[in-house]
Image 1 (cartoon, rainbow, N blue to C red):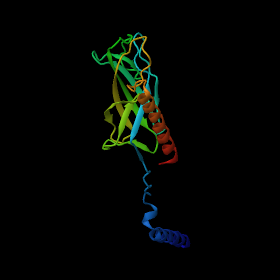
Image 2 (tube, rainbow, N blue to C red; image 1 turned 180 degrees about the vertical axis):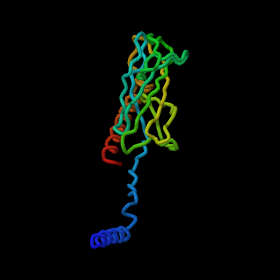
Image 3 (cartoon, rainbow, N blue to C red; image 1 turned 45 degrees about the horizontal axis):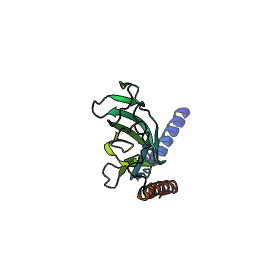
Length: 192
């Protein structure tokens, strides 16, 4: 009988102890939302089409807040895929033709703490310094697909200068673009 009283006493003590414990201890703790910085400028550099050469996947993202995750070159007239980082794409192996129009589509992934804002009116997107078109932005803002058309240069043409020309204004515009990109990079690194 003494052992039953001991078991009951321990059981009652446990019930009282759990009754005193706050229910919030068992509630799931909400974590504060991480602050996300909207990306307002995107500039990607790709190797522009040159007559007689095959398309390639050379691309460079100009900021640490995003990176190139997928790239595809297509013939704008025939929609044939000339190059793609997607393994499932049916690629037609043919060289760029002089004065033909080609489209590059680039998928960009936002780095941790950054997002592409679909509702932003200030989001500026460029490829090789040329205005590009936003094709799609994922609902969560982590991925954005952009496209840009290029007219293929002659095989012996100079490297495309993005339409800036080789005069003083063109050189000044090029230097201004480099300075702006550098300042944006510094601002991103410092969290501005």
